[in-house]
Image 1 (spheres, rainbow, N blue to C red):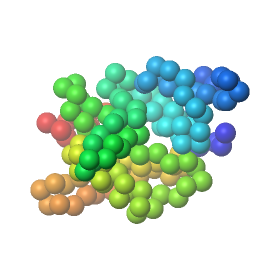
Image 2 (cartoon, rainbow, N blue to C red):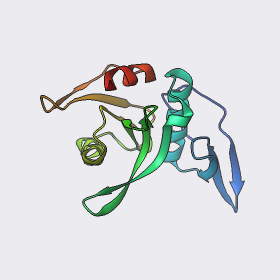
Image 3 (cartoon, rainbow, N blue to C red):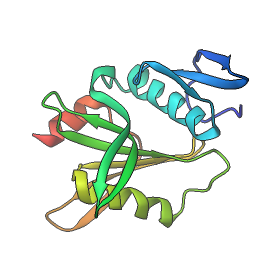
Length: 154
């Protein structure tokens, strides 16, 4: 798999029924190793080890109902009361982050109403802070530490 612009780690990769799989510690199971999953596992590891996101307050493949259609958020970070704080959307490293990607995560946010939206293809990462009062957003220079999410949600 392609090297990413994220800290390295030693993922558990095995072959299962002739296909490569990677262990997802959040879902506690092996999942198909796709380029997007490679990004997800690196980014989740980064959130947990570098940004202090508690594994117990992260969820992958979160099902939401958007205008009667089932959609899945790639990763959602929650507070201790299980209120969503951040949505993260992943793309494969060869997929450029475009307005369409932000449109996708913004649609998901119509359901979850989080304060932070993050998009990553493993090479480039964007995070924006929502300002619902002024109906705008601000791009941040870096992904916030978990304690910053908690403080801003109070």
